[in-house]
Amino acid sequence: MIGLILAAGRGTRMSPYTDAVPKEILPVADKPVIEYCLRYLGAAGVERIFVVLSNHKSPLIEYIKDGSWLNVHVAYLFQDMRLGTGTAKAVETAKPWVNEDFVVLYGDAFFHPGEFAGDMIRFHSEKGPSVTVGLYRVADPRAFGIAKISGDGVLSDLIERPRLGEVKGFEDDGFYLANSGPLVFKPEVFDYIEKTRPSPNGEYWITDTIRIMLREGCPALGYRIPRDVFWRDVGTPVARLEAEEYALRNMKNFNKGSKRHERKV
Image 1: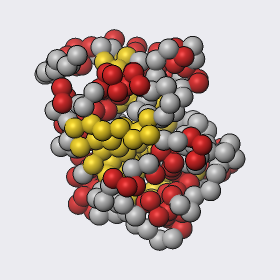
Image 2 (image 1 turned 30 degrees about the vertical axis):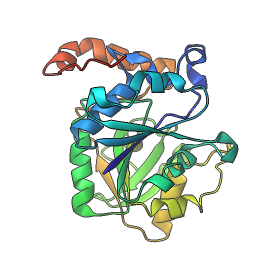
Image 3 (image 1 turned 90 degrees about the vertical axis):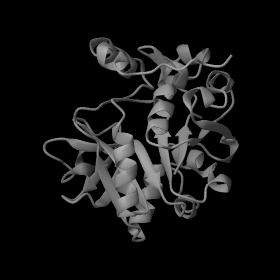
């Protein structure tokens, strides 16, 4: 299994902080957000990881380097925004380098605890679908990609940033299931990215790619992230403060049993 961390976005919602550093390197507790992603992948047995970057993201390379200080092997891919923006185009950068199943994490997604990543990868490997989508319960669906799944986890629809009327019947025990990542794909996803058209805002969304896969009969599953896991997309100041407040309340759990690695300089 190969890991792919998407970190090419400019992070304009976090300005002026992101005028100085990439949003993925902003800390929650004592680590940059992207470091949690790298650690969780490494703990899940994913040792070969690509990080997708764009212009102005060199501080990430300077911080992560080759990843050896985290016992993983990191290489970098460049997303040329002139060829299209969005998560589908970010995933597409890995096409020449990936010929096996791979797991995608958003570089600005903060999870804690993160042991579920290994469980999700095993779930995907055992079931063998074309795609497995990590799903997190949210009360308001409008800012996320919202999934509709059956009781046995079969994914039947996925709508990006829906209006409330568009997701009637999507409720799951009074909540909605948001595509928070991770995502696990078979390499055939690249064929469907080629069929993906721009969204209304001009970006190419991986959720639209997954919808095409569903329409064409590709087997797809949703994986419910355990309820004791905390998740925030820390691409906004409010969400990052919520993550920091969670971290401060649970600092003992952050440090317990966590062996810190020395970074090479």
